[in-house]
Length: 381
Image (cartoon, rainbow, N blue to C red; front, side):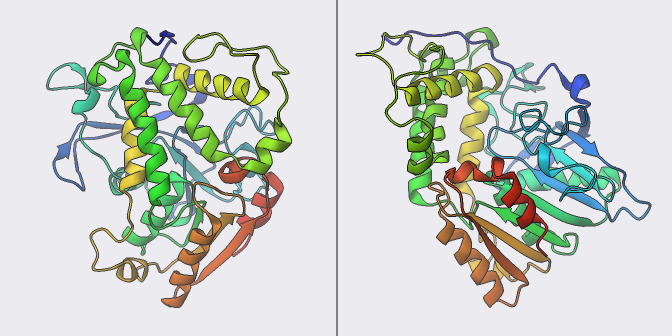
């Protein structure tokens, strides 16, 4: 039997005031796949000042397990203080002296926004797997409601990578009159079958954890083992063979060993890459909700920008903004050729599209690590 490690699960994070996270409430939202969800809470952070016309706003959309904290004003030069810290701030590519920058936690998330761990007002219990199926479209419509409430009339740019890139693309298609520029990073019109396969294995691992209990678990008895192993699998898809060889090779563990998700003993010692995966799995299990992981990864799978339109071309033809597509030459999850093909299709339809490719060993995660290349890329028109 698998040993269970009961990490403390942090959902609806208790450090909102420290991060100066704000909250927006919405009575209800009609969902793309049917039904209504409400009331809804969306947490967000802002930097800079909105001008009187409401036209200098930038929206940043986060990746799968990200949150609102894209920038940290107290430690602006620390790349670990916030997930896009070095790209945001006065004089930086996302210039907070010029723009009003917004980053919201997605619908379905667990960093303050309404998700499976939220209380269902009908039952006064957490939704769990009774939470409705949500899509990228639903996330974007909730963000749109938030921005309207903030007085934003025009988005100078929408930036996003990975599942955030799916959101950015959706913004350009659903609200072309509102978006002046869109930057889609490490994302395509739809996830590949291989990507869906990896996500499904991760979800099945979570569901196989006895503590998952069909999605009904208490915070103090969360399915940490399943979530940690799911994260381990995901981290492999975010890296590349080159980066793993450069960083870990076949070295034995060179740092203090961390407990594996199953707490079973090592077989003949431990490789450094194994230690890294155990650390990453445990870190996510301490801060993220397993059901949110299930729902958000499924939203990534279900995403197809052509849904609701007669064809992919019909959807992409709606894009009237300048569009920058950024691929990564070693990306395993969203291969660069798929991002390039999307840019070429937008251009062929008469759109103002540019494609840039990052040269990096870091795989899919390069947009969270290659600060100099990203800075140059984001400054492209």
